[in-house]
Every structure is written in C-alpha cells, then in structure tokens.
Image (cartoon, rainbow, N blue to C red):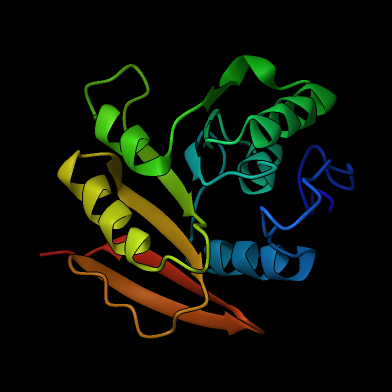
Length: 187
C-alpha cells in the first residue's frame, strides 16, 4: 500500500493484517482519486474526514495532495496505532486528529460549530456487511451541517442499489467494490 500522488508519492504505508479490516486496493484508490479530480475536487487546503479509517490511507492520500486537516475515525486500537504510525512516517501529526469512537458517534459529536468545522472531502468505508450504516452516516453529515458547500462524500461498499436522499450520485464499480461519489443536491 503506497501513497499514489503528491508530496509523499511512493511512500509505503503500514496496514492492518488479518480479517478485521479490508483496505482499499491501490488500484481502486487510484481510480477514486482520478474521479475526484475529474469532478474538480480541490485537495489543496481541504478539510478531510476519513471515517472507518483503518490504516488512514485515504486521508493520508489527501494530505499528500495538500489537505490542511485530516480527521481519522476508528474504534480499533490497532487501527489508530497504524494511523498514528503512518502519520508519523510522513511527518504530518500536527494537522491530523485521530478520534477513538465509531463513525456514527463521531458524526453525532461533530457539528459545523465545533473547532473542526465543516469538511470538504469525506470517506465512508464501513464493513461491507452493513450497508445501512452508509445511509445513516450520509444523513448525519447533512443533519449536523458537516459538509462544506462543494463537498464530496465517497462511500465504499459492495451494495449497488443504495439510494442517498439529498445527494446527487455518481457510481463506479471496481470488482467487488462499489464506490458512490455524493454531492449535495442543488436547489
């Protein structure tokens, strides 16, 4: 697992071995970031939330491309240790926050009025066995006013027929992974 682009391009990242996590493959990650760039997403100065962070590779990819803040949310002690190790290896600990709670609690506790403010890019990669959490989390993002006006939410799941109310949806499939790119509906 490597950083694909930006300041830390080629940097090898640690990951969590075993069956408890499912890291996004380098191929899928590269495709996700290509789609984000084609959508005009600005990484420079972006504020990123990487929920169900695992190794933190998606947020770290954004950091490498110029993000100013990344918040990593994961309940696993092992995952948080790996995220911290990866952030230390690239020297970016000061502009990152690791939150030791589950995604829904994190989204409940955050609000636009918190010191972290709104996010420009959000990654949601919950266990494939629980697609409903995607719907709940994306609703909480709007309910708690956590999305900046031009934000993008990237959801990774294996379920193709999810509907996300209040979002415009672009969907891509890469093997087993189904990626939804969500933007807030205008009007």
